[in-house]
Length: 261
Image 1: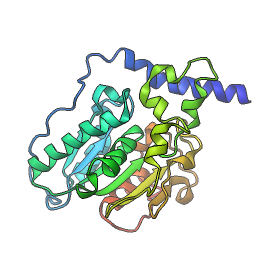
Image 2: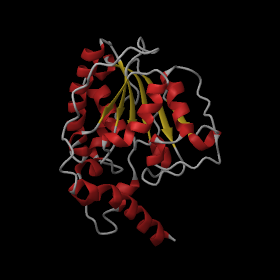
Image 3: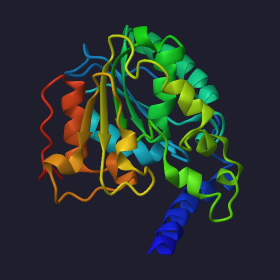
């Protein structure tokens, strides 16, 4: 049973890492933000959806489309180099992108929805790069805030230290990067912090490692909707998860809609 679990885990991670060697056509930096037409939510903070490891921006269009349909001004940020490099470097690039969005929209703050590694990138920005004053709401979807043993286990199955992927090494439980990120207050500043996790997350194990302390709102989808099946990548596609994101961005009580499509 343990061997089967290791093989399944390794296969899942390999599926994410292999495209990194063939993604040379993908841009290393996201496109410059363009002006957004006013909407019903034009006075609200613009929302930046931050992709994860090997996360092409097109993969986040479904959640971006839902947000736009609900009146939010939305930008999708693809991590530089698809996020395989140092997460701290990605955070510095993200800091510059946030300033571009603020300039284009005239907004003093942005809200962030980060999937997987994207949640770590944006959290590092808030905690260490001045993002406290630029971010109003932070929502992470399946981000390994305390690391994941899926990254650690690659060494066991013969793939070395995360097959050489720096970001994966940094997401390993016990990494120096996570020690720095989780030192002190998990939720600094006046940012409203929300995390979302799912029992079926095949890449963040244990799943509670996707939570934050120090006053964050931590949402487990299955606590409200025990029959809802949502995987790691499914967090950006699932209707129930989206209802949590929308409520967090609107500062309304979190009540997941278990029947949402």
